Image (cartoon, rainbow, N blue to C red):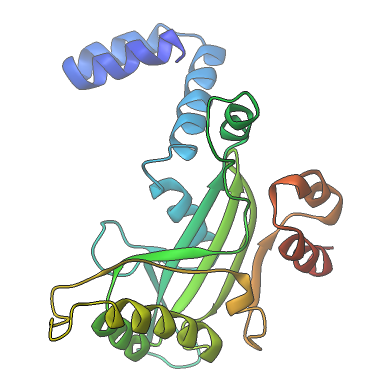
Length: 235
């Protein structure tokens, strides 16, 4: 970590606001810019927190971001229907080329998964699926490579192939429970999906996508069929 940034973080967490201000005032513009860039790079590539990637995804799609882990990730007012609120669920993914290098150097056992337009719902249940269907929310899936935004795709949660795929996973999970065991209090740890489960949606919207020449540079980090799908959509 940048030592200047390390000092700022230390002052922020242990010092006073005045001490932090005095320290920053004495720094050059280039030093401040360098610290900000380092902080953003570290934050946006954080494997344990997707908050900033979630924020970018939601705001780019025209929603107001909702902070916190409980509930949906954003909302917006429907212009054509005054008073109606549309909610969204964001599923951002980040591919780290550093992790790929670790695999190539034998430090990591398996290669990191390439971007496939997918995401997952943690601790999912049939009750949650029913609630999500009733909310009639929109899904936002996004992909980043080393913090660089590659794509944002939006589609209705209630797209049938998407719903059916989630139902199938829940059904398999519930069938594995011991005979007579109630499903209440039991969770499917991860209900996953990828682009194949929503690509046929007539209401699929490309919110953001890199231009074709730039997209081609990131081809090695995207699943082949998904890359071809994106390339057809790119300009």
